[in-house]
Image (cartoon, rainbow, N blue to C red):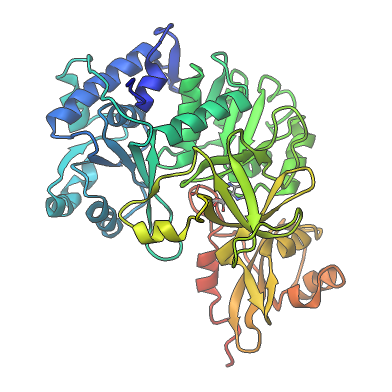
Length: 506
Ligand code: AMP
């Protein structure tokens, strides 16, 4: 049987090894041939450190080309790549490491001392890799040869485990197979028309599905080039648009780019595609972007467990506020959350997906896994939404963000859209807060455009008659910014904690 190792699918048949795969802002370049050779050296080093096929390699390092090579090398060696958010503390790392039991942990040199006792608990070795690409990993790899026979893998073997952000309960390790990653990237390459002429601006972190799989795998499968930036700097990104073709970003990239006067039709005219995902792109941001640049942002929807599910079309209408159509081979349906019975077009329910993109299950959590799949194989995403008459999927929020007030369901997105439409409002987040009479009180947290004077009464007046009484916010709170995580998602759990006592009787 031929190997289905993602690495083989990516790099066997390399016809142009001198083509640039990765470019650094300082002018450094790595060709496809170098990438394969470097991955060979790191894979040899991993084996010398005792990493066997199926072993987990846990990695908490800053973004660097060496870190990406480590991902490729781990997969090549038949091991399972386990990236961890650089923000995790030692306390949090202890959970991930004792749960995943990696045989090797790669961390920043500054963290190695602290991680030692945790590694000892599971008998893991430690290697280091700094943001400058230096450390015991690179030193060890430099002593090995580039030749490495890629370990044979089947479609269903694990390539990676990514822990979900776990805003409620324990974070879960999503097990992703070689075929989950390869099939999804292949779909995206053709759906988004990637070719070897493309130059992607890569400013996303690589511990998350977006920057690691969507951005990197798609670029490499297409034999395109990516400009690897360690962080997102709007002015630098606008400067690079002169010679790049695609940007993949989270919505905050787009709102921050819009704040720069340097963003114009002229500065974006070389670009062919702007993609957004990982959190909702406001319809207003979409429109403002079109007006300023002449480009319609292409919004797509995915999650750690499923890779990408839907995308607005390349040709055809890119609908503001919608996440597009199911990707080829992916089935999407909306069901009654209680019964799992599919519901009619335009009705809100639970989004469920099925396809080769959907993960194998949660690491060592068979019961949790079973509970989140329907008997016919559909995965229950936890996202509430609807499919409109044209087949476009719309997301109204996470199921756990649903507000139930006086026994009525209130979808935060609906209230947020009305509030966002009020002149002077920049954005808003609607949450449910414990309320003695209503169970939960609809509560609006609002950010103004900083130019307009708005108060609670003004917002409520503007909403009057636009929303049913039970959907009206009981309180409107003004803040400077909404709390967001690194992927730009509004952390409603943080807001719920902060305002938990809002309706308590004094
Ligand atoms: P993660 O696993 O961190 O990628 O988070 C996945 C979640 O992000 C999904 O379940 C959605 O709730 C949300 N998400 C991703 N893309 C979008 C999008 N385009 N619009 C709205 N929510 C999104």
